Image (cartoon, rainbow, N blue to C red):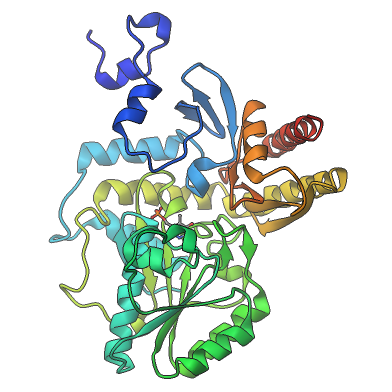
Length: 422
Ligand SMILES: *Cc1c(COP(=O)(O)O)cnc(C)c1O
């Protein structure tokens, strides 16, 4: 039998005549938007992945908080296979039963009443921005509504979401940016009150991450968010939470906002929702459900394939009790990382996080950067990802075991020993 192109790509070098995969060719043909590591991953199972040389890695990146059930989970494989054999894609011109089933699950497991499906985090946030603007125009009578976002936030790479993102490094060379955004420092109530006073009558929404992921794993403060909720109610403006990284059980609760004791009017999900299959969702309460036919759309959004896989992820999170596992293993991870902070006080500052989204911050004065730790850990067989220059992020699959947490801690320890003794 002639191997398919995909099979050829994954053949061992001995089994094929010519090298099937060339990093040089890849770098010549794929746009250089990413600073890639010299590593090609070709296979995964559970919390393990393998490179094209057969070397095994413990995966504490999980596609950046995306592979909720790890790699090749049987529930996802079955859902994907069955749905693709049944029906892969149809237009939203028609009812899609499995989209309805996923919406029903999300509404039953959150504070939302309504869902719009799209394909990524940026798209979900783009939808939230449009919803907030229409709400501003039609319910609040604002002609040019403003959305307040936070410094050090991350909301995506489309023009509106990169503008919403409060980090100039992502906006450089992309001006003119989208009008209608205003930034305040995160977790700073006085600054928010000042902004609301200055922009009186123009603000339609405040958009925040419950815990800032890309910005350095900064958890939101409960008192701050409770005050933000009150201010939104008082000014009749929407509270939008970007749950793209914190949602879908990652923090040990279904949604990050449950750690803050509040409910948003609007929130977004993506990353962990499909367990690795591209899907995003915009969710809102009935009171701000202002979209009408024609207002917003997506060709692929909520298609049968993506929804069937996402539903299998949701159901498995429930049936395998992964909320509890995320909380328990997250505690174990943070306790182990605290011990490393005590062991390397010159280089490590502190550990922060909720459930299985955790950050290890390096001392400002340390010669070691987050990228150095990530590279040293990779050499030991552990995949980690930075969150800014001084924070190492730990976002393993929610199926991670105590044994895997302990193994990862040992590998980080070894990596730090090597780094600090060289
Ligand atoms: C990753 C991320 C996004 C962007 O998601 P994409 O799927 O890459 O568009 C938006 N917001 C937050 C908080 C994220 O972590």
